[in-house]
Length: 214
Image (cartoon, one colour):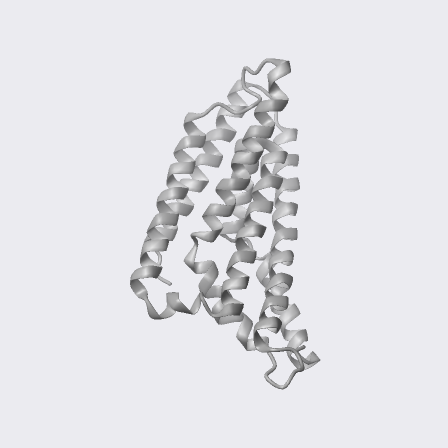
């Protein structure tokens, strides 16, 4: 495994990367606004699984294809951006589970929205080429060619650590967003604002992904 000269800078960089507010935190907050705490947790789990996909791809060298095939990178970016915009519009147009729900049907709706948030979040992360490029650029800097572990295994372990750190930050964002929502007066008007806020954030993230460079 990497020596301490590489591990200490890696851990410091990982903490900074996890704590700086970015698209993942905004996305998790948007899902919490739209689907409540359970939806936020399921979204964080989906991002975690999607992130592990990119970690494995980086360790195996598959993500490097995005760096040498610009068309593939652009295609994935546009698909991911359109999917985020679609999700945002869907959230705005769809009632939340807590709006005008019968007591007996509420739990079922919450579970369904949680599963939907998980699948959508995992798909969004897997379709995000920026995540792939990050791991390709970041992980090799902290791999030690002289270590007893092969490079691909070092990158896999380091990537899992990064992914877990980011997930902890996402979970904290869920608690914070949920606490803010709990402090507001519950009602149809508040829920409508939350739905519009969550959907608008996702649309904004989609537009930003589409127009920004690598």
